[in-house]
Length: 578
Ligand SMILES: NC(=O)c1ccc[n+]([C@@H]2O[C@H](COP(=O)([O-])OP(=O)(O)OC[C@H]3O[C@@H](n4cnc5c(N)ncnc54)[C@H](O)[C@@H]3O)[C@@H](O)[C@H]2O)c1
Ligand SMILES: Nc1ncnc2c1ncn2[C@@H]1O[C@H](COP(=O)(O)OP(=O)(O)OP(=O)(O)O)[C@@H](O)[C@H]1O
Image 1 (cartoon, protein in one colour):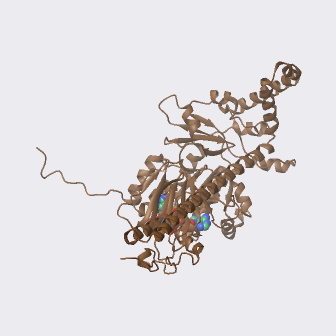
Image 2 (cartoon, rainbow, N blue to C red):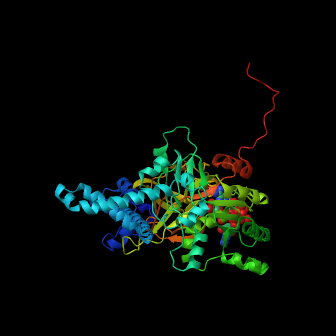
């Protein structure tokens, strides 16, 4: 059988009738776009080898294979460069934000003196003599700075009444003490202190100063329940603690406990919309927190409107005007209370695009995997939470970047999106099979052919991923779940990947349809052929308060929420091993 023509669907193994193999010089460039998948070319080659005796045809196929390989390598290189560029951009922005904050606090002067001192000590003897005098001055400033920071970081010894102390020492507390070795020596073994009390921007007017004091963020400590004494290294590897914000450097599977160093002063209450019972509870809670706990209260603009419709009494309740103010909320709010279901927790998490204050989730939904607190007992629960200590679950989030193939600039990426549950890439309304090429740290993982793929956090393991056959994972386990949705394959088992990897999902150029990404079930974005979604662990977890502790709450929720492994116990009577 001599295949003189390869222009039918059958002979090319390619369902696209617009492609004609028999006319290689009739628009080779156009045809090449259909060959970006090496697999398609290999299939073509196989067909050719069976049927092909024509030398030219074999030569042509070889050439195509080489071109396809080169194109694939180029696409991979581009995507990985884009991912790297996005990562550097993110780091740069973090660094810039940090420097701006430090500048505002006047930290730079101390830091400059310190680095001057360090450099000076490295200089030669002549330079040392010349610089001796200013160095002595620097040393004195440095010692004084250390002394203040040391005092600031030993609240038990120096701050018997921290409310009083906070007012007196407000100006002294504007330095970062994590650089001070004395700090770790004086902290108890398994604790990290929040060594800075946050305030709004500095201001001259007295009234604003009073307001600033009211708005200061409460300090607190994180501690670990460790058996061994040698946990210092571990704790610093796990959570870094700067300016009252919890950020994870690594992850911990240990129970984390939060102890307030000063009383919380500001609470944000977030509610599920369109629910009368939630509205009634919210009004009651606001009144109680104001009258009995003297707290500043923030709510959403919608909720403030609802409260004011009820009574002008609620005039004291604060809110925000625009998205820019939302971005500053994390620096004002000590705790966030949610009244709703898991969706409300997801909503709050999506509002905080950086650090998240501890969340106390009250259950007013149907399932409530992440909402362990009972609304009927809210006074007792909030009483003990405001006193502390509280067990918290640090729920890791995924950071997702969409990188468009059409982007002209290598660093032209869309804003990153943080998810608490999962990012899903699926076929949307298309009836074609989704085709997704997946890479893990630039190693090829697999090509998903099915309805789609879920990249889930361990908190999200009990949500969509579970429905798609993924394992349930304790939320404190660090990892990323890789769960296919209806894969058209008998052997595609879900994976759990370590937390430090970067996953890249690309819609191949030869995909028959675009794919759709959605983030915690919201914000759908179309991914065209060539577009890439890059996903890695975010540095800002969501700390949620536990009713008992992470493990107890997790097991309680899978038992109560899902009736996990519920079965009647086998009776004692009956056959038995001898
Ligand atoms: N087939 C599915 O199971 C399916 C389909 C779409 C979305 N979802 C999930 O819904 C989430 C969005 O939740 P929503 O409340 O905004 O939408 P929703 O109101 O449609 O509720 C979805 C359900 O998922 C539950 N849920 C959410 N997060 C959970 C978690 N971490 N563990 C266990 N259950 C959880 C909620 O309690 C709710 O019952 C998505 O992140 C996705 O995980 C699931
Ligand atoms: N503050 C909010 N503003 C806007 N939308 C919200 C807010 N809180 C929750 N939502 C949305 O409302 C929907 C329902 O919320 P939630 O899941 O909390 O309640 P539920 O559906 O009654 O509870 P469950 O999910 O347990 O059945 C979710 O899709 C969520 O995204």
